[in-house]
Length: 89
Image (tube, rainbow, N blue to C red; front, side, top):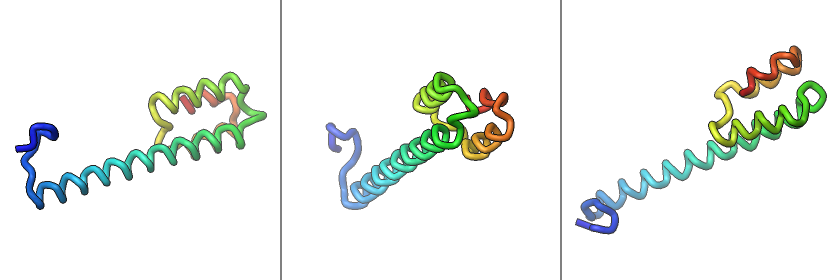
């Protein structure tokens, strides 16, 4: 038993541990990329439809909670109906 990692250590366990760590890293990288793209689209596609303070508020919310799964669709909808900007929160 490896007390530092709190798990049994053998080749199979180490391999699975490394795979899980890689999956978690990959997931974090995908989430970061998704956030970066959504925020970039928010600011580039809605500069005239949504006030800067409101875009900043949306961005802050997305950094805290993550963007909605359908963020691109919502951004495009707000381009057509700017009064619906709160759907981005």
